[in-house]
Every structure is written in C-alpha cells, then in structure tokens.
Image 1 (cartoon, one colour):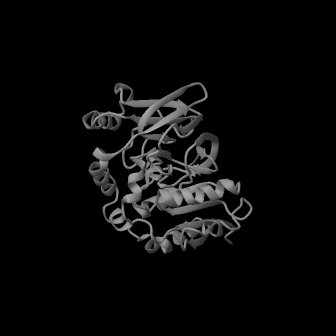
Image 2 (cartoon, rainbow, N blue to C red):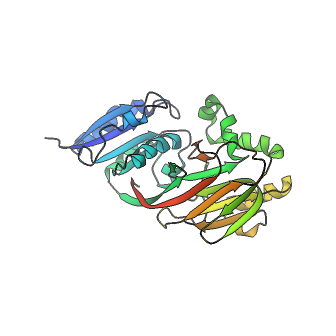
Image 3 (cartoon, helix red, strand yellow):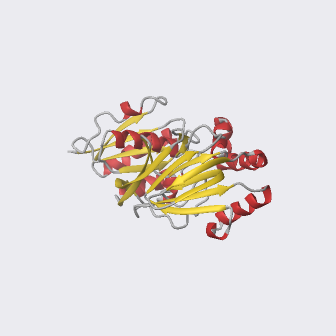
Length: 298
C-alpha cells in the first residue's frame, strides 16, 4: 500500500512546453519507489496558491516544481508566506533555469527525475526583499529592465541568447541612477547602471559572477556596475565573467546579510527583478532568511 505522497506542480507553457510529455514517466518512477504523485497543472499567473492547497508535512513528503526560474519563484513565495515546511525539488523545464543548474539538476528531464529520487536534500538560505522572497537573485537598474523588452516567443526560441542579444543592442543607451546602498556596517553612494544581489554564484547562464557566494553561508553577495564609458563598462563585464570583480574600478562587490537600497534622484528603471519576475519598487530592504528552505540537489 502506497502511503507516501508528493506534490508535482508543472507549468505547461514553460520553456519548450514539453514537460507534459514526461508526466507519466514521473508518476511511474515515483510509484516504483512507493510514492503517489499528486500533479497540478498551473493555469496562469494567479493560481499558485491553489496549486499549493493542502500542502503540509502531514499530507505530503515533498513538493516538486517543473518550470523555469519564474515558476520556482512563484511557488517559493507561496511556501514561504504560508510557512509550508516541505523540501522543494526543481525540474529545470523553463527557458532560464539558473538555480536548478547551480544545484546540479540535469536539463535532461529523465535524468533529473532519477536525481530527485536519490533524495539528496540540502538546507539553504532564502532572500526576502520587502514582502517578497527570492531563491537566486534580486537585481535592479537599466540592465535588469532588458528582459521585460524581450517577447516570450523570442525568449522561448532562443533562450539565453535572446537576453545576450538584447543586452548588446541596448548597452550604449543605458542610463544610470544615483543609488545609496547600506549594509549592516557600510554605506556606499554611486551612479549605477545595475546592481545584482546573489544567493548563488550567477545568473543568465553566467555561472561565477558572485564568485564568493554560497547558498548556505548566511550572506548575500552584491555586485554593482558603476557609470562609465562604453569601453570601460565592456571591460567591467569581462571581469565579471572572469570572476575578477575586485580587479575593476567600475565594479562594487560586497557581502552582507542585509542590504538597504534606495534612489537619491531620478530612477531610470521601474521595479526590481527577483528570479526573473517583476519585483517591488525601490526602496528595497533585502535580508537573508538563513536556512529558510530545504532543496533537492544532484
């Protein structure tokens, strides 16, 4: 008799829209390990609380999300706000799968299912920004606004390439904002093109931007790009990719458990970005929720 039960939430529109083809395989593999799979197909952007209905330690052993970073962020916010303490497994079925990649989850869905069944679980930190939560990154600035300009068709067909192409085409026209950043023991004011606050080491396929970051160290890593000319900004970008942010005067790198970020003048971007989703407007209070979540890892 099967007594164990897991919840599978999947986004049929994520990425190449093919996860539905693996639904029966997921059920079969988990049934072989004596787990009943309760699957929920998300219908849009407003049904995430319904997707998580009845989730509790009493009813389920784990919850799995098949989708991209945005889908992970949606279910994370429900879990955190409802104080649902269940291990979260991520199946990288979206266009952007930064955190799943960091955890070592295979982009091959069948291999990923096998990884999940090994039940390797790690306790990690989570970010809280104002009243929202994030698992991988919170960013703001002119650069962060680029993703909103990329239509879903291009995003799904070209994946990360769409972001890179858009970034290159827009870079010469990007504007800075005067930003003040406070940490628990420091304060910096600068004209910034963008700021990135990381839980893991990277975003957008760049895996080692925040080279000091760990997902269970109780700290976040901030990387900010200062105002400069096109060539200097390009050089700073190269240093970021090489994990040498300390070697460039146009970059700021900080580690702390608390960041307060506010604008001191005209703001040239509307809202922060959290895990690829629209986040709150400035000012931002970003804090570490230490050991806030358990996740399945490779």
